[in-house]
Length: 223
Image (cartoon, rainbow, N blue to C red):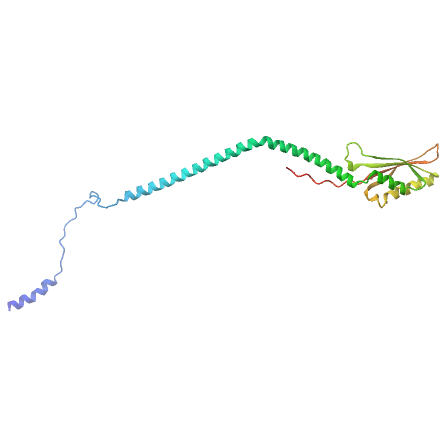
């Protein structure tokens, strides 16, 4: 019986929970030694050193590029200073060339826009009315005006009575104004003088013909 009772008590003892023994923890973690293989300060210092190294490389590269740029600027400025006298001479010569070119263009435009004197004389002789005799032909330009402002002055004598001579002068004025050859080149045709000659009884007339302005020459190119 005792053996049976002992056997029945064993499962109860085995089923009892195991309670760990309690004791206070007196460890001071701040004073315990650091047992880590790689410390955190190593990574912090390494990162700071890497940033400082990168900044130093950047500053060094920027300073080198700035020095190279200053060197190039100095070389270009020296070249400019060396070539400036020749450039100034070339600009001065080109300005003189522009002035001469403008004069040549002006004269060329005038020549092209105006007929030859010989052609004018020949045409006036062919178209002159029989009662009008041309005494002189003058081509001139007022002082200070360009060649385009030139005018032609015809001086002549009209035969016949006063009324007839005045009509002949007016008809000759219209003939010159509407001339198919030279009329388009005339800007105005005016009888500027009409005086009866007391000695001969003939009418002395003066007709002023102003040419149309020549076309403006093209502007010279800037240097």
